[in-house]
Amino acid sequence: MITELEFQNFKAWRDTGQVRLAPITALFGSNSSGKTSLLQVLLLLKQTAESSDRAQVLNLGDDRSLVELGTFQELLFAHELSRALSVRFAWRLPAALSVDDPAQKKGVLFESESIRFRTEIAWQGNGDQGSGRAAVKSMAYGFAGTEFGMRPVASGKKYELFETAESFDFVRSVGRPWELPPPAKCYGFPDQVRAYYQNAGFLSDFELAFEQLFSGISYLGPLRDYPKRQYSWVGGRPADMGRRGEKVVDALLASREAGVTFSLGRGHKRQTLEERVAAWLQELGLIHSFEVRSITKGGKLFQVWVKRHARAAEVLITDVGFGVSQILPVLTLCYYAPEGSTLLLEQPEIHLHPRVQAGLADVFVDAMKTRRIQIILESHSEHLLKRLQRRVAEETLDADQAALYFCATDAGESKLTPLALDIFGNISNWPEDFFGDELGEIAAMSQAVFKRQEKSRR
Image (cartoon, rainbow, N blue to C red):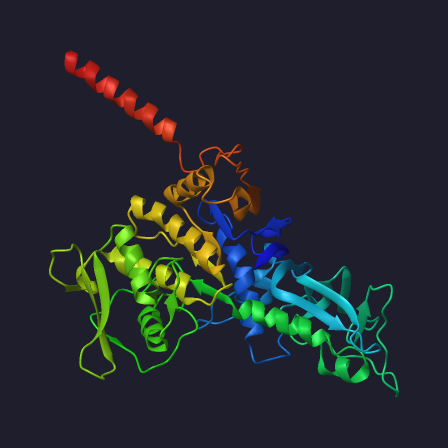
C-alpha cells in the first residue's frame, strides 16, 4: 500500500507537499483543480515501469496508454524547462524484506517492511525542447534508515553509486574503475552496478519491489463503455477492467472459469465474483439479479441478462438504466483485483443516483476491509463523502483509514488542503462553497417565493 506521495513541478502543481495516502483516499474539488494530476503521477510511473525501453526515463504515453502527457516540457509546471520534475513516495511491503550480509553466513544487513523512493528528472540540453533529453538528476531508495541511489558525477553524463549507511560500503570488483551509465528508466540500477560491485546484488530487490507495486495498480477512468447486446470472450484473463471498463465481462468469465470464490466470514456461504457483484447491485437497489450467459453452448459469444425486480422478466443489460453498466466495472474491479492491490478511480459515481453514490462508499469500505484493497479516487460526490463520514461516526471505518483532500487553484497553481476528519466523522475545516452555496441557494429561493407572493397580493 502506498502511504505517502509528494511531487514538484508536475502540471499545475508547483509542490504538493507531503500527502498521506490511506486505505481509502478521496480527492474532491472543482473542475481543473488538479485532482486528476495526483492520479496521473502514479499512472506515469506505472506505464514507465511496464515499458520495455529501459533507456526511456519516462514513458509519457500515447493514445493507447493509461495517460498521455505530451512532451516533457508540457508536463512541467508553467512549461519551464529550467524546472525539474521531482517525485517521492513511500509504500508498505506485503512482507518484510531482508538484505543478507554476503560477508557473514546467515547475517542480515538491513530489514524493513517499507521502502521510500525519490527521483528527480530534468531537461539536459540547451533549453530547446527539440535539442536535448530528459535525464535523471538523482534517484534513490530509502530502506531501513539508509539511502541507496545514483547521481551524476561532474561531467553530468556518467553516474556514481552512493549509500548513506554508517556500517556498509559498496565493494568494487577487481579491475579498472569504470564510470557507471545512467539509471535504467527513472528507478532502476544499470546492469553494470551488479558487475562492478561485489555486494550490490540486493539493489535488484528494490527495483523488483517497485515494479511489483506498480503492477498491482489498476486504473478505471471516468468515461466508460456503453453496454453491449453481446460480448466476445476467447478465454483470456485480463489484468484489470481496462481504462473504460471494456474488459468487465472478460474478467467475470475468467473468474468463473478459475473457480474463484470469496469468504463472507464464518457461517456464510462463499460467493463467486458474479454472486458478490450481484449482491452489491441488489444491495444498492439497482437490479434484482444478473447473469453472464453463453448464447450457444461452448460458444465464445455471451450476453448479460438482468432482472430489475424479483417478478420482472429478464432483459439484456442494454435495456436497463445506464447506471448499471457504469457501476459494474467499479464493483467488479474491487473484487477481481488481487488482494493488496491499489485502485485508481476517476469519478466512480458518474451516472449514478445519489443514493447509489452513497452506497458506493460502503463497497469501498468492504473491499478495503475484506481484501486489503487500497482505493485512491477523485470525485465530485457529496453523497459519497457524507457516507464515509457516517461510517466513521458509526465506527465502521476508522478515521485514520480515510484521507480526504480538497483541491483548489490559486493564481493558476493547484493547492491541496487535508480535510480534518475527527473520530465522530466531522470535518472541522470545511472549505467555503465546497459543494456549492447551499445556504445561498435556499436564501435566494426563499426571497424569490416572497417576491412572487407579494406580487400576487397586489
